[in-house]
Amino acid sequence: MEKNKIHKLTLLALMIALDVVLSPLMRIEGMAPMSSVMNILAGVLLGPFYGTMMALVCGLIRMTLLGIPPLALTGAVFGAFFAGVFYRFGKKVYWSMLGEIVGTGIIGSLLSYPVMVCFTGSQSDLYWLIYTPRFLGATVIGAAIAFVVLVKLKETTIFKRWQRLFANERMIG
Image (cartoon, rainbow, N blue to C red; front, top):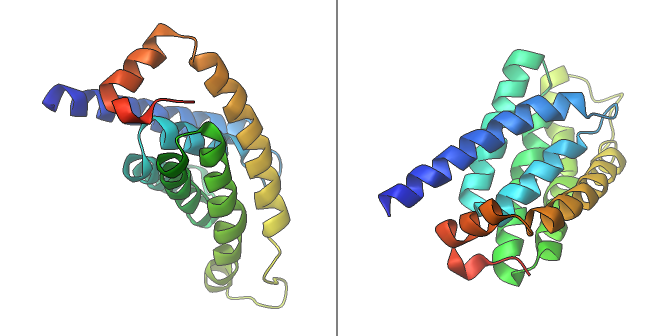
């Protein structure tokens, strides 16, 4: 059991590093589809708790080192949580993709408005749905990429080993 936890924490650290590096590199202005990819991968492989921790740490690192506004947290954290919860519910990658779209694309985008009003102190330039199209676009792009990555990963030996190590009941279907 202790060895399993060490493996999980190691994979978590690897996913944090990948998210921090890939999100700024593969970015469309105002959109971070790679963050959605990593949220779905974390939801499938690690579950909602570790996925949420990954998104939280990545958001804090990106805010601190790259000067990204608090949108790095409002979108990614809810998406990672719901990607893991929906995957546990449905046991299919499609459920994790839907969880990311609901969490980041809808809930995260709507919660970004009051956060940015507090952050900028300005209400005149912002309206409630300003972030929704970009967040939804990023999550749909990220979900498509994550699906392709997971289909390819499913064929690898290491991925099958991760599945056995972390949760035999959460096999990808």
